[in-house]
Image (cartoon, rainbow, N blue to C red):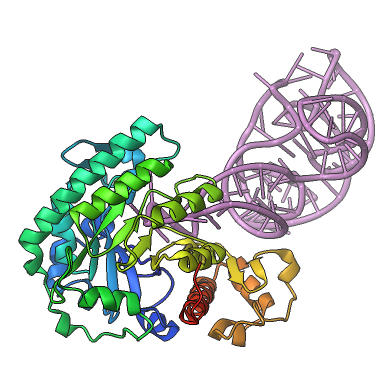
Length: 362
RNA sequence: GCACAGGUGGGUGAGUGGUUAAAGCCAACAGACUGUAAAUCUGUCCCUCUCAGGAGGUACGGAGGUUCGAAUCCUCCCCUGUGCA
């Protein structure tokens, strides 16, 4: 899932995303709540219509901002008091509020409001944080159950571009009978597993989140500065405790190598700002490894960015030109770089899917 | 020709006797980036030596001078801009 925090994947338009084969985007509760505000989005017919996106949308709950805006917030049992990073104004996000906003935005998948535990954290701190996330998860589900018919759009208005490749989402969508199943006319609420870097806490968090019952489960609290091997260990051990017949969503990961590994390991969904942010910063992912296009060595390099890539950028432009665009601070650099990186990520996922469909598994 | 103003490191531009190898910005070069406060951030950026801490050498138009000490003060010269002839 490319990340489109503010209702836009930076540097790239919706029609190009569709052309790239993007089926689902991530948006953000906190940011869209601050600007343009839920009421505006609701009045515009929900986030899909507002941003003219025919695919699916998952909204993050604002839980990550609890982690990243550390200087601007205060966490209590009730919720999180924020100061807006835009104008310093005071706001309060609670599980109920996060649900209300996400219902208003009308995303296909909404995330429970969690606390993304910082790293490093003591076991006690990780447990307390996990317990808070569990209590919040119950509140989220309760609020959602009571208000889930308030979504501002009906699914039939959205002409899906979902392809048959999106089997996991589809199966979840059709699953309306089991515990935590979602009505296809409404939205799905996913729970989030926390537990820091402790395998035992992760297990407990997973089991208790499953007890609450959701149509999909996310592994949160990773990619927060810990060593990558630790991320891998925690992901793999947590995965074992999550039902394989529900989407398993690993939040905030990762590099092309990582997403391939995790997908092969059983992760069904991932989101990451890396492809888009790195693109804007001149870091491009290719079949030959990372290419920092700003480097002087590419100044007169006529070759394609990635000879093995069939994206519009690689078919048409030279490394020399891409470097020049970057050095000259041309907007087109960001557009083209983003296009390539997203294409590369999506191509990576297509390869993994084919591999899995071929009967492989880890 | 006269009168003002000014000549600083790749560029721009601070600095008007010591704490200045010389601010800041730009350029250049390298690095970082993983549920987006990110078209962002960090480092290097006169030369030589050192693994590092650091050591040495050059340097503020030129040449002299004053001073313990000068990019900073004085003299002459060169150059640039503006105004007046």
